Image 1 (cartoon, rainbow, N blue to C red):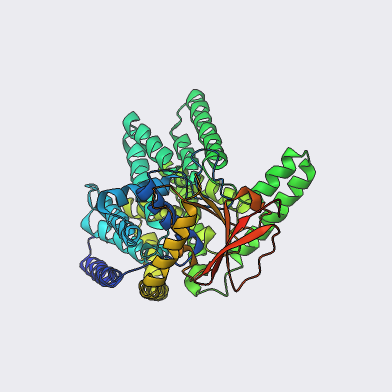
Image 2: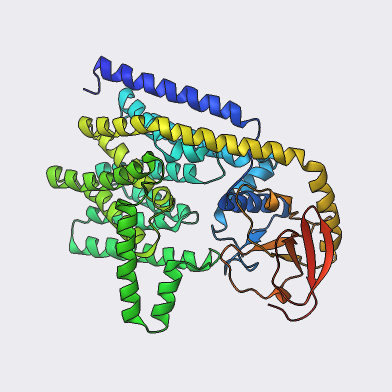
Length: 486
């Protein structure tokens, strides 16, 4: 059936249409895009910071301190290193990250195209599933990082298929190397090591693979502790309960959070565009599909995929938040894995089901993507139009920041999305000193005396004592701490 003319022509038609849409969007994006969300501002600015200052110490963190190692932001050091290095090679430009995202999508398709075991119609089917799936068009033209994780998931899945076909030690080591590197970007990748357990042929093998998984899981939690800037979260609150010896309370909290996440994942989301809710269901269904196929076929690749899905969903539902796109962004690699496996193994009915899903929802996904691109293009126009006032503001701020040995500025308010405030901030003084900022998104109690300056908007109240006004310009007011304050 994969060779049937009607099937092949239909797949090629949709693939050609998708490629045309992406080419059109790439041309439109080249007019200019800038970040508009808080996460995007951090990815973009800290990448610029590495390009211009050659340091992993982030320009934007939540408190000005950063992570235990490298003083990175809440996303870790790896994104800044990756995109900052690209900036050093080709120059720093706002389009670097979106175009890199597109490059990651193309690399994912190239990996599929290089698979000699796949027929051309299979390769085209996988390409259609990937290009039409919600997160790929929606986030590829933003400053978010989902395209990188698409590439990792494609690479990991192809390696798993190869491992379970040939059982070569080289492939296993390469798989472990890949998830180890990917874990510097998202620590969930190390939990994919559980996919090697079905390789065990003896109790000794089982023990070794279980031990490997435990080591990887431990390293994952150490990464979160050492390489990511800490911020208030449900996981941190439960960890504090356990450290304080309140085990029973922690257990009750975990159970309550688990029930809340179950409701949020399987019931919540009706207020969002309908692909959002359907995508959550298809991700979960793809994991269940792997388990059902294992029970029917007894092939260990399905067992491996089901284990990976089970562990990832368990972590999501017990310790993380299953709402507001987080669950889709973090769990989408499970769908990519399932889609590649079912096409590779020639499960036509499941392949068609996946194709029907992504194609039927793509109109709405593409509408979201079109709006996201338009938002960033409009902000880019506004950003260019404000260049004279922005440059003058930075020049005045430069003069004051250069008087400090290691300039550290606290933003005295929570910046809103879709504003240019964070893009106004210089990250280097005229003498080459890196400038760092504390962006207090989580309303933590910070002491202003720990910072060289406090920057606030003139139209917003600033509740802090012992501050001396230093400068007013462009709706910003700069203060300098003069003594003990809040």
